[in-house]
Image 1 (cartoon, rainbow, N blue to C red):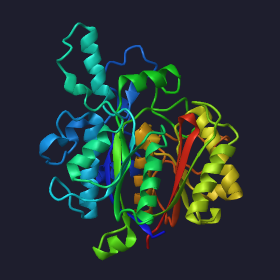
Image 2: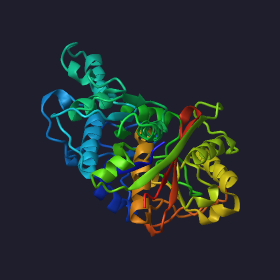
Image 3: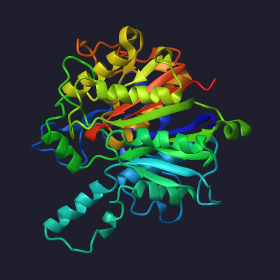
Length: 405
């Protein structure tokens, strides 16, 4: 298997419409969680989320149907992909086709827009008016739009495994590149807020009325988020040949299922330990070599405790010296896009030697005996990092990234 690099990163988050704005505000300890304005939240347990400011998104100048009637999720993906390709120095647009692969985590897609159509119908509106709002309902709609927009003629895959979707997407893309199926792949995920998921997490009492506090003793639940991340995953020899800059090297990934419960984590941490050890084994990395973990850190009481139990099982006494931070206190839980966003942040941490902080953390919890990087970003050399995603249905995954130097 050949060496695989990440050579381009595009981000759309509640902290900013691009990579640099998101990174700058993230390491400054800021949070993008605020009042939801997309839809009426009256009667819900919480009224906050990490909502993207649509007006700030810079969509690529594309002709044809790629942008026509695009959902918010698709627009997030298009903007992130355009930024990632430009960052990598790769040609994009509707010109010559590129035989590159595309692997995206897909979630709500056009559900937010479909909800508006259904609401009008229930109110007695026309059966025909607004049908274009249903175009992006399929979960693979963002992938299809990216393929059309950038002329991607290689394999196209949409992964839907809840909150681990785009972590697995990056891992699959790296495997395809490493196995020689394609020299370049775009990977990541996109997800957007909608009434259905907002109501669902509220009904589960999984959300906090205040901004999420990952790993903190005062945590009472997650804050939902939205956004997109697209990474250019490239064969190292191909990248060297054109003088591309590597943010990080993809060393390996692991994916398992705990077969325990649809929403609750297996509490002992044994299931997630299997995920982490599988990723490290594929990467050929010893536990002692890991310098940083970008944790799942949803800020729910059960999830954080089970996650930290897994870290205790894997790292043992070393855990106190391995920083573990969660970006969900700043970016919210972006569901099927979360793992891609966190992989991008982890790659930036490796490249820039800065560990992102856990926004909202203030009080330690004995159930989470970790160093959460409180406050603002911390300087720190990272040779090997793990980005972990532990999802509903027991669908867990972890990426192992390393310095490409």
